[in-house]
Length: 352
Image (cartoon, rainbow, N blue to C red; front, side):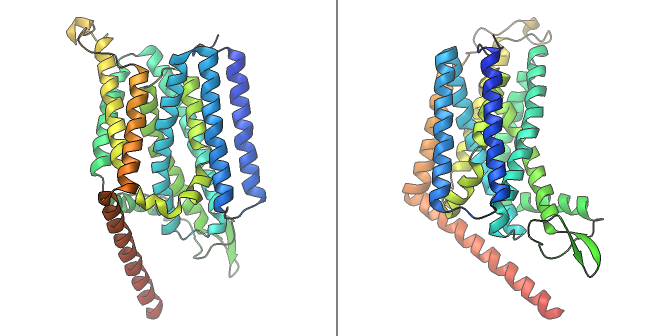
């Protein structure tokens, strides 16, 4: 049996099958670079969601309700965080004016990098949990800090910060001003230059790194199974590029998603701290003994809280005057920002 309660054979077959699905998705994008229709995007997203639900049912059947609930809670949490990731991808695509035809390839690159980074963090996280139980104190505190930071974070400041880092990393590289299809290198006036696509990939990679740092402690607060953590992350990333095109302008309408994710991260952070207190082994805290008063929050409660939070945030965003007014303000601010940027670019062009 694997450490998760599933047979090792089941785990290997499942991981190989999921990697094959991702590989086929990648090959489809490479061979047919295009902007998917709403119908195509909807079919893919529906297929991947159904696949995740079926997989969770199989895990439930094979290993029991506890592990099944852990998968569903982890998948929903990671999927919600991945949707939040889409907001940042949209900002990056807009900032670098990536042609719509090639946005699928950029998104697929981002998903692969995210998967690799999360695999590394999962292996490291599982090893730390196995040997250092006190790591839950650190994970819990980190998630509480992340929740607070995300709630009060200014998107403009984050954009400027990321842009500044990317500029420092690429300051010595010769860049062309225009894209050359989906190529990373091009030739302009006999000189070999990097295309803006390189800068897009670097920015996407850095974004993935930040999200991996946030998401892995969150799911380890719901399960100790590295297999469940990894498969939940794979399913959370599946169909993400199609979801990008499916949601489109709806992304600006989900104005309370950030608040929901902040609450979920804070909830899991509190759960981790309570778990660390309940199983405490640090000698300088309560003489190395656990605190009997610290409750252990069951996975079933976590799943209910996570689902309820996402549903409430969606309803408030899409079907209440408060959500519609907030979305209108966001759209107006973006329109104003776009107009100001166009004006500056126009003045620069006329100055030349």
